Image (cartoon, rainbow, N blue to C red; front, side, top):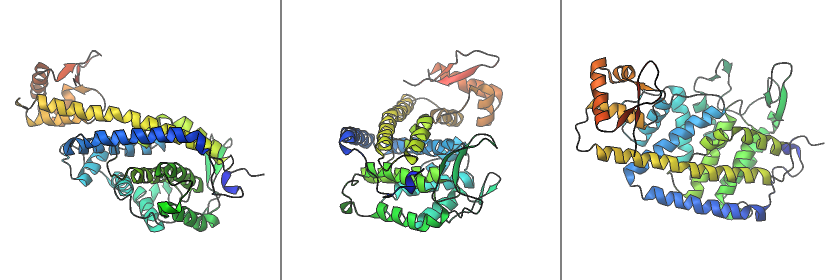
Length: 373
């Protein structure tokens, strides 16, 4: 009786119905190419802005999948600094945020470099720079040891836990990870059935998270490896869609499909179908990011001949970059470091320019929202 996929004879030689998936893969490759074409047509500045938005969302949502909420401004600041973009008005990032960002950027911007044990250990150390996940001590920069028992994915209250999955024992990890890394780094000519890097992205994600080689952070690293493979599929560092953001939306289906696959046979057609569908939805959702970038460009074009002061420019950028919560005059005064009266005048000027409008929400404190056309 084989309870998990990694216990089956033939592991890790996956199988899937190529005929059933070929049409979806071809359509997906077409949409991928169209999106890259649209990105190239934006021009350098707008393209950088779109990449910044996509990477910020990717880092935030990959952490949210694991139940960790990062500060959006810190993430954006950390990415912008590494891309050489202006970061005025954004808070400096802490070590935890910088570590997650550095891992993601290394995966996607250095996608052509080999994925090695040393590189993975470095990523893991970046994820947990202090060696802790919350209050729990994490063994960083090395494979897990299982000193506290087998690596299991568990849910439910203590005493009534449900084991969704149990990873291979720690004694198997050196051989398991050598197999994985050799496969991932093999020249494309050495691959016959999985030569397409989109296919390999799906397989790499499943394979890595099934081996579960670290004490923690395996999900985020699996998604970074998949993004690295997708960057190879496009031959570009320009990230214009976020798989992590779409997985966050589809989180229930993601975990259900993953569990079903890890408890199934080596036929992973179901997982492949779900992954390709998720990628298609991610590409479709990227249109929202591109629309926001274009709207932002149009707004600044509209204001090019207007006298916009530094406070207004700061606050407009915060709103354009996804300001959380409602904007009130008191928040404006605090963030722009000015008096309440000055904030009110700044806001009224932008209302007169049809850039801001009073929100229809009502309530005790008037709030304002950005008008984008």
